[in-house]
Length: 198
Image 1 (cartoon, rainbow, N blue to C red):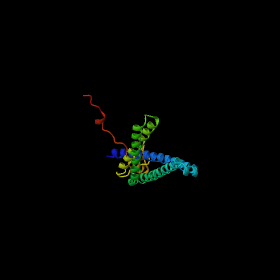
Image 2: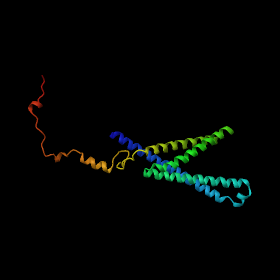
Image 3: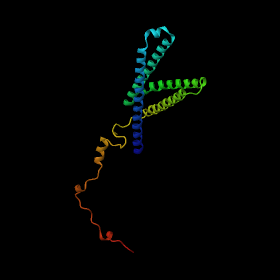
Image 4: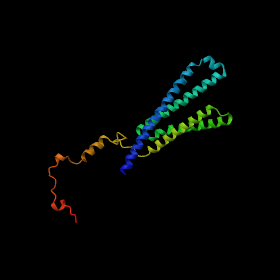
């Protein structure tokens, strides 16, 4: 049971570490795309946006991109908070939002395959879909793990399993030092020391 508990703790710690890295990468992408969309929106001249149809469409498209990435930042921030506090309810918005993104991308990929010849954009879209599916599956596993009891906070180093608490209990379990033993070693009988060659 102790071996399973240690392996469970190591697996949970590794999964938490991977989840934090994944969420921070997504957060960096969100911030980058949000800043670039806002800058793009500011650089569109108001006369161009109101006069021609393409400018109006571009402005509406950029506003949609800003809305999507703002929602993504909120979901990623909630998920990071949920993982750090071990409250899995904060992962639900992330799972729902990226499930919707995944469905939207799959439908767009199918539509693109049916209406256009094979091109490089379809390959990039396929790689994006596979990446989001992989990230979504990892977060689903994290959500399931968070339904179990949280890992013990005593394990500081997940690789070695050593911590301050384990070190204190291990010191009490050590055998006595040789100098501390007051008794002399027992004397052996002649009968036990002689080997019978019979």
